Amino acid sequence: MLEFKTIMLTIVAIALIFLLISLTSNFWFFYKENKIKGSKDWIVSKILSEAYKCYSSNLGKKESIICSVLEINSQEDILADDITSKLDTSKISLDNFFAEDLPAKSKVIIRFENGKIFIEAEKHERVGS
Image 1: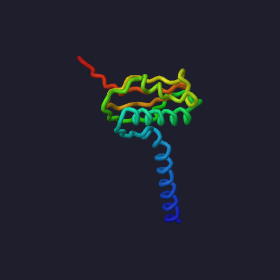
Image 2: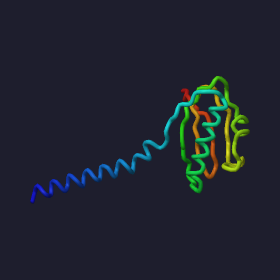
Image 3: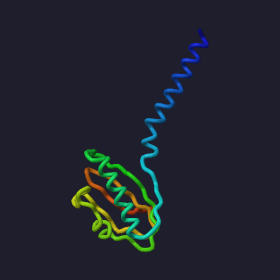
């Protein structure tokens, strides 16, 4: 009888561990990081593709969500106008899309917040004394 209880407790413990891992995996791995290298037009199309996926999958949510982080490597800077000019307004309205200028080699954050998509370069701030 003691062996049966030990076996059952072990099975329950393993099941709880799997449950905790599955619940907390969304907190620890909430976005994926991709590397994109190529021409400016290719990178803009990939950024917009990620933005469309982010917008469609999170529409109706109120919280701020980082959908993906892209590490871009282009030969020239990407201006916000380059991105918005290629935006398909049937998928995302121009009123719900905000992009900023991106350096040629940078990390780009695609973020969804209150029904809007933000394309922004990752910024590192130094705290001085």
